[in-house]
Length: 389
Ligand SMILES: Cc1cc2nc3c(=O)[nH]c(=O)nc-3n(C[C@H](O)[C@H](O)[C@H](O)COP(=O)(O)O)c2cc1C
Picture (cartoon, rainbow, N blue to C red):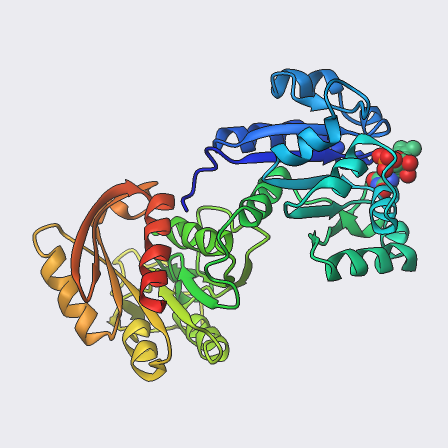
C-alpha cells in the first residue's frame, strides 16, 4: 500500500449532468498519480463533455457503445479495480437502483464485482426528491459508496445540496476507495499549522509553519479509511474540504478543541507548531512609540506534554524541530518526557517547505528519512498501523 496509484485501473462513468465538465481535469489528476483510466460516457453525458477530448486524454479508452467490439460491458467490468460514476445523474441512479441495464454504463455496473462509488450531482429539488433519496439509501445499504454532494450555488442558479466535489476532492475519495481501509473505525486527531498568539487586538506572534505536514498526514490517514479530525492554526496551504477540520488559531483554542475531541480518539498526531512563548496581552492596541517597545514573552503551555501525559489511551505521535547537531538527542529526550510512542525529528529546513529530512523514532530505534512530506505522512501511518496491530 502506498501513495501512488501505479497499476490501479479506474473506470469513470460519466452521465448527463452539468458537472461532467470537471471530468477531463479528473482524468489528468488520476493519471498523474499513476492510475490507468477508462471513461464510459452515456449518450446524454456526451452532451456535457467532449467525447473527443476524453478519447485523446485516455489514449482511446473512452467508450459508450454497448454493442462494440468484444463484449464491452464484461471486458470493462473485468478490467476495472474501481468504478466511480461522476457525476451520477438522477436518472442513472434510478436505473441502477431498479436493476435496469440499458446502456454500456448501467450494464457494466450490473456485471461488476468491484467497489462502485456514486457522486450524485443535480438540482437540489431533484437531489432531495424522495425517490432519489430512497434509491441512494438502498444502494448504500447494498454496499455502494455514495459521496454526498456539497452545498453551493448550482448551475441552475439555485442554492443548496447538489454540487459535485471538485476534481482534487474526487481524487481523494477514489484514492480512499482503492485504499486498504487499515484505519477503518479509528479516530485520528491531527494538529497542524502555526499558532498565532495575540499581543493586542490587532497583532500576533506566530512562526513560519505552513501546516503542510499535518494536511498530508490527514490525507494519508483518510486514504486508509481513518476518521480524521484536523485542528489547525494559521495555514499557508489549503485544508481539503473532505477532511473534517476546525480552525484553532491560538494555543488556548487548540487546547480546548483537543480536550473536547480527544475522548473517543485512538491516535493523536501533534504536528502543529505551537508557540513556545506567548506575549503579555494588551486589551488596547499598543501605540507606536519612536523609542520602541519591549515585549515580554512568557513560556507557553506545552500541549504535547500535558495532553499526552493525561490521555494515555492511544498512540501519540509527536514532532520536534531542531538544529542537526542536537536533533536526535533532543528528540529522544522529548519522546520520553512528552510520552510519545513515535517522534518525528525534523531538521530546521522542514518548516514551510515541501520536503523534509530527519528521523522517525519509535521504541525500536530511529530511521533516517529525506523525502517529501506526503511520503513521510505515509511512513507515519505505517508506523502507527504497526503499533496498533
Ligand atoms: C441543461 C441540463 C442540465 C442537466 N443537468 C443535470 C444534472 O446536473 N444532474 C442530473 O441528474 N440531471 C441533469 N439533467 C437531466 C439529465 O441530463 C437527464 O435526466 C438525462 O436523461 C440523464 O441521462 P443519463 O443518466 O443516461 O446520462 C440536465 C438536463 C439538462 C437539459
